Amino acid sequence: MTIAANLLSIRQSLPEHVRIVAVSKTQPVVALQEAYEAGQRAFGENRVQELVAKHRVLPADTEWHFIGHLQRNKVRMLAPFVSLIHSIDSLALLEEVDREARRCGRVIDCLLQFHIATEETKFGLNLAEAGRLLNTYANSGMPNTRITGVMGMASFSEDTTLVRSEFRNLHSIFRELKSSFFSGVDAFKVLSMGMSGDYPIAVEEGSNLVRIGTALFGSRSYS
Ligand SMILES: *Cc1c(COP(=O)(O)O)cnc(C)c1O
Image (cartoon, rainbow, N blue to C red; front, side, top):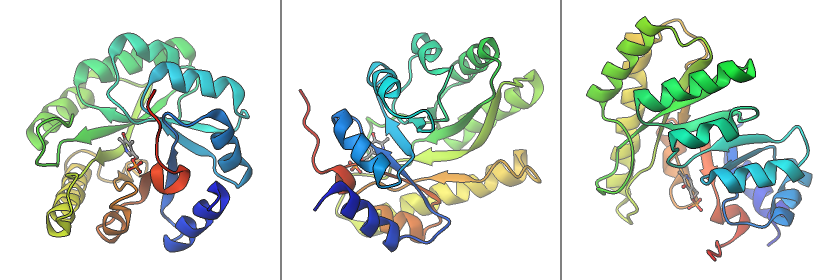
């Protein structure tokens, strides 16, 4: 299967309101170009240098999403052009994004990343931490960031009941934050969940942004 054919079949399996982020980490630029020609515009990367390098060669209307753990000292490299940061996991990081966005005269959209999986290793907030972060955010004025929703990764597991319950949990977190902190805020609407192995379940549980790598590009080659 070609990338274009994969993209088409994934697209056709999704409801129209669900957007795809093509997760292109480790993939060569030609693979991104092939997806771009097939109509894909949003690409997700988890390493800052790699994202910046690919941004230089893809067309200007490509949308760049950062989906990995983000170090504060690397925010400056992304700030001029990044479309959406999926992985805000601390107030300090959000403050840094706000500061760098201001230097660029931009408002940068951000998602709060939640830890919803059973695995210890995954980054992210819990609901109490997010509540504290959002209380500070609401009172401190960070006009150059806009929180537009939440992101999470389910357990890497064959147990679909477990995976489904984790996605359901993230959806309920989304609703809770919406009513406590963003009621009437139209921009707070993104539920980023679902990857190659679990996106159909994520969409059934309310995802409207799926992050798909291997199902689109094939397996990754780490060098
Ligand atoms: C790599 C990655 C994906 C995509 O994973 P696939 O299984 O290849 O679809 C999605 N989200 C995040 C945060 C990732 O790091």
